[in-house]
Length: 483
Image (cartoon, rainbow, N blue to C red; front, top):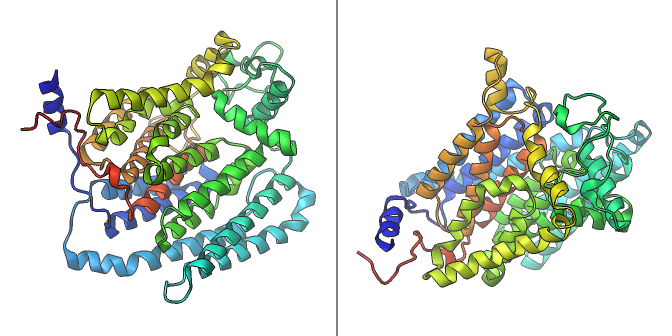
């Protein structure tokens, strides 16, 4: 058995990945910008330009993942141009955020106060720009203050969006509001009666709607997202206050992953993504997922003993993340014995069980139907931003949904071959695997890809300051029998 693992590890190893690889970080930044533009165009629904931008994102992401050491003169050129180009990308995102409505469901009566949102965007942009001045122009204390003020302004923008769009016409918001009400009333959120607000079956399979036009699911999300959303409802009567809090905290963690300007720029590219406040307005939970990912990168750098717990929280927050569970092996690179590996996954699995079991065991059948089986009955969406939707439009034929799982399997193999066993490597792997999985999926929209954007900028922020404990390039479980 030991020889088998040694053979497997020797065949699937990562290429050298320098911690100061300027070109790789530049490609990551471009990938994030391309995906942000794909979501900005047509709000993340299908378009041919969106498919083109999605393809460019995948190309840049793969280059950043597979890039090795290049000529020093080439790297010197990229070192000069990468930050200014990405800074221009930030300003372009700010302009888009300023010049377009931040969401779908803003009340007509609130349009007269849109100037407040635009003013906030302008203030946030100015503060962010000042915090990105060269080190010789600004002290660390002033830079920190400017970042904090930028985050506070983003909070103000989020509150404006929530207040001006109090009832977004989307089932996700209805799910979480109803679940919060049920949970606080001592009822099971998974057995709550939720109406079909769309009135047809375009967004649901026939198995998900009963004869009284109510859904047969109460909430399709795992318990952890219900807990977090309920906190927002408890404090402000709206689950999205929790989502806004984790959005701002995610930006803060990314910004302070290290003292350099690059981390701050990564945070701003994430926070100022033009459709970020659209994700907040609609009540989508990917904001929570990015928060847990940011915590993972922070723990890997500063508090590695809490890393398994952080990983458990992430993988327990969305059911489709279980498909990319193998990338957690990237963090097992420093485990030099079966016992340490068992402890690592024991804590991770224990965390997942601890946050899931209370609601799951309340009514196990309802939980398995809501979070598991019902997902297979969701219909194919021709308006998805995916290659399957493109195929359906070109050939007028619905492709097999199993293609997404085959594509994910290939993506995982490429991860094991190329990606370093570092915090950056984990964020990069999550971005790559989820991007491939969604690009070949039957449903892929703005909220799904928001996790990919967050993962890209987590990787970008951490690439210049890796955690030393994860610096090994191979998964070495048998250090005493090397050949």
